[in-house]
Each structure stands twice: as C-alpha cells, then as structure tokens.
Length: 205
Length: 77
Image (tube, rainbow over all chains, first blue to last red; front, top):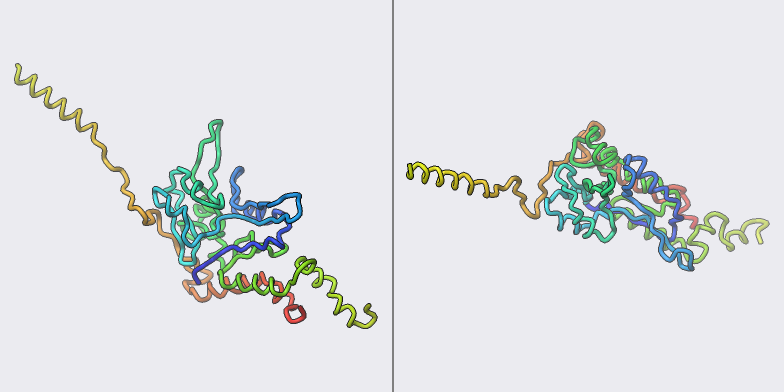
C-alpha cells in the first residue's frame, strides 16, 4: 500500500457540500480556511458538472518542490503532510498548487497570513498520534484509527472516494461499466427497475 | 597618546565590522524534510504496530464505498 488518493465522480456529485461540512467539523477548521471545496463547472448551462476538490496528495507534489524551508513530507502511504512549526507562511505552495489546496488563515485589518493549512487526508501531522497538539494543529487522525477521511465516508452519493488508488480505481471502474448511460448514470434502473426486468415480472408491462 | 587613540580606533573598527557579519541561524538542506518525524499510523494501542492489520482495516473501509458490494446487488445489475 503506497498510494492513498481521492477520486471524485463528477456524474454523482450533487453539490450537497456534505464533504466540506464533514471536513470542517471533524478537523475543527477555522473560519476562512476551506480544506475542501465543491467546484461547479458550467453552472446553470447544459453539461453542468461538480467535483469536490482538496489536496490531491500528488505523487510528485509541486508544493514540496517549492517550499523554501522543506516543511513537507510524504508518508509511506503517499499522504502529503507538513510541519506547521517549520512553515513560515510564505505562500509559495499556494502558487505552486494547481488545485488551490494550501489555505492561509487571515486575521486582522491587513490580512496577516498565518501558517499554511491544508487537507491532511485525516492523517494528523508530525505530532504524537491522537495527542491534543496534533488535533489543534492538524485536526483528527482517522487514518491511525483505521478509518478513511470523513469527507469521503460522509459522501451520500459516494461521488467522493478515498482509499488506496488500486481499490478506488476498481470501485470506479465497476461503477462506470455497470451504470450504463443516460438515466442509468443516476441509478434510475437500480431504483425503479429496468424496463426489461419490469416486463419479465408477473403483471409487468 | 596618539598610540592609545589609534589602538582605540582600531578596536572600535574591529567591533563595528564584526556587527556587520551575518551568521546563519538555521541551515536548510534543500530537498530534504527538515521538520519533526511523524509516527506511523499503525503505531498505536489499536493496531500495536501491526501494519498488516492496519492495511486490512483501511482496505475493508474502502470496500464499504462500493455500493455494488455493500447492497449485494452486483450480480443483478
């Protein structure tokens, strides 16, 4: 196991923002910091799609490459984390990240930029597992509890998947090959039965 | 008197110049993590250092995201 990833199925996301809320609540993220966001593309016009975006825990993370104080590290499972005690809040990681994942708490009239905060894949940070310091700085450590990030586990339509890349790729592949096209994408046949099945049933048309 | 003045001037110059020096406070090694070490997710009371048990727990959790298996409808679809 070495590649913990997120995968968002744009066909399933219903923009409920459950993932955003779950993340904020679980990690007690302060105002102004959004570790996860739901982005809508082509809003209001045909072809509208939405995806949930946070740190994608890149295999070759640009934030790690540009950090002048080298406060980033990658765990054995491929989760990109950082040491807040070392971060100087320069914002280079924010400019380098293609997903806008690094967040900076704003404070005061002049927009003081604090230390960077980002999605930790609910894996805490470089503090003792389950310690108060870890929770205060980085949030909940669900990974050490044998659980997955709450955003994905909370997702009602299971649009957002989290886990080992091989496992979630298999889930997504199965889904894409079985769900068909058109209304089947939305699970119409699963919920109400497919026409051929309804006809085969006694009394079916 | 002149020698004393000269010695004082040279001394003041040496002290003044030493103030202009820049001493490195923290030396960063480019490209290598400089922060605190992190503990492994399986190093706790729940998993007792058993990596395989932790990996199995995570995998089982990920499989719960597959509703085709969870609802046991995989064969019907």
